[in-house]
Each structure stands twice: as structure tokens, then as C-alpha cells.
Length: 337
Image (cartoon, rainbow, N blue to C red):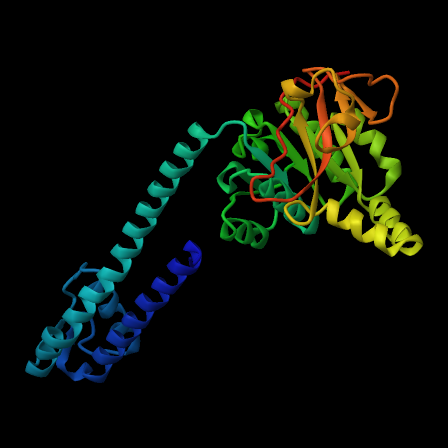
């Protein structure tokens, strides 16, 4: 869809062309017009007459007096006048209609949006995060992308996500994304200092949301957690560890890459313990259990503190990816320091 400013500029250019054509027609037949002031028509008078005529102002100080000039007004200038008005009035009506429709859509969208996911930054990290989350069953209309780049937001909306243009370090921008009603917030900015500010602002607006942030430098991870992030991923270190693992064992590197690509091959899935599994050990379940989440602790499958599984536990398992494979969100409130 063409940008509204570009549409208005195109319409104004068309109106200017009509004005110039009318002035040229009048000037070409200037002998058939009479100017009450000096009885002669120059190029300025032609543009003046074209302007007041097309705008239907019509002061009457310059008038067609010859038959050819009057015929030209009937068959040429009058249609140009109608065209000129259609262009200008049509642009105004279209702009007002589009603005009203957009405001109505945004108000309706904001009133119905609840427990959605806000993604700050639509670069490589942000796109990959959205793709992974949506692969678990999250609907695209439940994702709101915030980015200062208009091109990035255009790309996000083209993919089916809602978009908000602006600086996410400003609370009014995050409020437009309804971050105070979001369930989870993914922060994937290009700069670590920006990530810290966005995390502080988001946590101030929403005390209960799960905030996951990415940083480039590992030394900034503690600062992100102090700012309110529940989990911090160091992108540079994570990529480096995967590179190192691939050097030591290319096969292991391939398996790890497969595990972190949700929706294909093998997937890491978090799910609640079912009643049939209560009282069993992690090894006795049908799935390949990697870890057990008990309370707010993540215990290895072989940790002696696990003992037998409890109904309130959650399991992190490795499963073969299928269309129905989903990560069941952990909706328990997170502890605040």
C-alpha cells in the first residue's frame, strides 16, 4: 500500500499539472480575454485567471470576451476545473476516510489485545525470535513489533504482525504497543545500552510480564537482569559456543542447531507433568527428559533432588517436531527481587 504522504504529493502534482495546462490554454488565446486593469493579458495574468477559475473563486476582473475564448472555457477549462476539484476534494476525503478507518482499527485492536507478545527490534534476532515463538502455535495477530525503522515495521506488517514505529526507550511508544497488557516481551535491540533502557521502561509499565533480552557483550548481562529481565541471552557468546562445539564435533553442532530451530527435526519442549507420570522418575517417562522445573529451580534429570515427579513440576523434553508440538507457557508469577 502506498504511503499517504506519497499519495497526497502525487495528487498535488496532478493538480499543478492541470493548473499549468489551463494557464497555457488561456495564454495561447490571450487576445480573447479582457483585463479590467490594463486591458492586456500576460503570462502572470494567465496563471492568475487559471487559479481563480479552477478554484471557482471567479473575481471577474479577467473575462473571456471573444467567441473562441468562451468556447475554450466551455469545452476545455470547465472540464479542467471539474478535474481539478475532483483531485483536491478526492485527496481530502480519502485522507480523512483513511485516518478515521485507521483510528477505528487501532482503537478496536487496542481494546481487544490481551496477553500478547511484544518484540522490540525487528532485526535478525527479533525475526528469529518471532519465528520460533510462532512455531509453537502463537498466532501472528498476537505479536506486536516495535522498531524505530519504518522499513522494519513495513516488513513486520507485511508478514502479518502488528507494528508500532518509535523509540522503545520511551514509555509512550511502549504504551502504544499495549506493553502493560502483554504476557511476554522480547528485547532484541542492536545496542546493549538501548536494551537496558527498554528493559527498565518495560518493567516499569508491566511488573508481571516475562521479559527476555539479548545482549552482545556478556559483561552487560547482569545489568539487564538488574533492570528487570527474567532471562538474558548473550548472542555473541552463544554463537561462539556453538562454533566451538561444531569444531570439536560437527555432528553435535548439527544436533544443537536442530534443537534451537523450533518446528523442524528435534525440538526442546517444556510441558507440565501429567497425572500418569506422578511418582515416577524422569527416566521412567515416555519422553526424553532433559531437566525438571520445580518451583523456580531447573534441575537436571539425574539430580538426586528430583526424586520422583510431582504434579506441579514441569518437564523439559526432547521430542520429534510435529505440527501439534507446542511449548506450553509457564503462567506462574515470576519472583521479583
